[in-house]
Image (cartoon, rainbow, N blue to C red; front, side, top):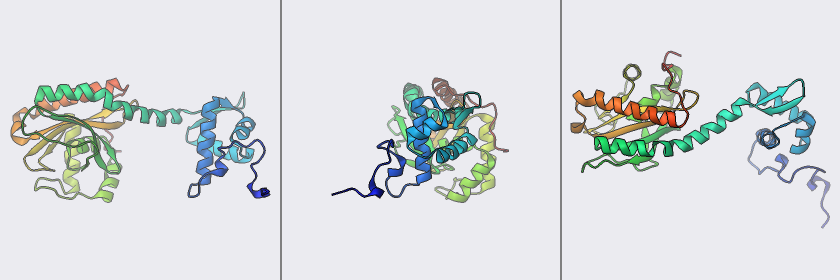
Length: 281
């Protein structure tokens, strides 16, 4: 059967052209990502070269590149008239690499914490308004905390969650509260925004977070954040166990150990801990 004109592939157009994206995708975004990927493969190129390589009109390619340039995903050299990948592209890509590597970087650190304190050590990150536990090293005590990798928990009622909230700007925390609320899990859960904000100030001051039976009665958790290259918290490290093994007089010592452990992981992934958290922003 003869192929109609509307079905023919334009001459010189790549087989994976963004014009042939599956239904349900946003064509403008699909074209933008395809053009950025094309630029990443070539390293640099003029508007004409990139448009030809991507199989899209030069006028469309220029609008896409101008938009990407506005957000620092690409750069333009006025002397050579060449486009190159921008720093924001590296930033996004490195975030994935660091998030992936943080598990490997923390594995022996968690094992050392578990052996040293006898309690379960956890690694978690913030995703979709909740803490997601991604790795664990179990302690040797018979009664211990256990969070299977993939388990989700509330930010406001967990050690890692509060450690991460304490690194956020105030408007980010406020947006989270509007979205997720402050549901109570035990009589000790912080359910008033003013109480939570006061607690976040204390966390920033002492350098570690405490879940004081706020998720489960009889359980305490001490946590500290792990930072990436840009001083952004990408994960949290914690130890959890029965309250009787986390007495008030020993919390400062445990907190200091967790903070040092989190800084070790931060260093391993090339991160930098900020000198002060931006809660006032």
